[in-house]
Length: 316
Image (cartoon, rainbow, N blue to C red; front, side, top):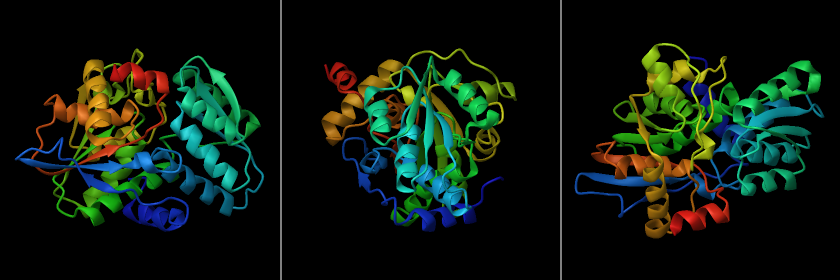
């Protein structure tokens, strides 16, 4: 395993002064007589998503290695770019973000406000290829939004918090894009919550893990548009996450667009929380019956960076 529990615990100490622990809140709306469903509120982070954990861990490590002033490079659908721009500004490091043209305005504007250089690309896959090429050609040091040990370890700090907040969890439900979040959580959970099942949720518009695990090897998929824009895109051929997910994640389910929309509207209406499409994946899996939950359940609400027009359309 390229990342260990020790790495995650070290990350938690490293980012403690930069990233607040997020609340775990009981949802009366989602709970049933058979299950107490709790929501892990990463939506309240300073950059409104869990991505700040991995970004701050990676940038702090990079800065402490003596690389002051060296440019960072990344690809992003929005949240990682925003989080890395926030962290880079804290450590006074230049950053170039290659970003999907379809990234929500809420995410793009926040990146620009942090002072990062933005390079628009047709889609996420193109952004990832361009960012890696730019870094390889001497433009800077590439930090993947999901396939980087420090990013995965940072995301895994959520697992440490879950173990402290609800030590008898039976199921942890995690949205899956590139797999960095569920990889980090699964590493921590399997060490600290060995009886808890870790269940991932992909969207039908982009489910590279479901397809790749079924095939027994990494496959390229035809990515379609989704309300959960942060979960779409093919996997980096060099990704660390496919093997981690294969080894440690108990199950992956796939939700449809209408299920995402209903779940997002339901969270806003019943929980009075603003979430983005990716964060609706877990509630969608539960509400649609694709996860049969019992006991204590934690659902990761991964982010809240949604454009006002999209939110208004869903609520209509």
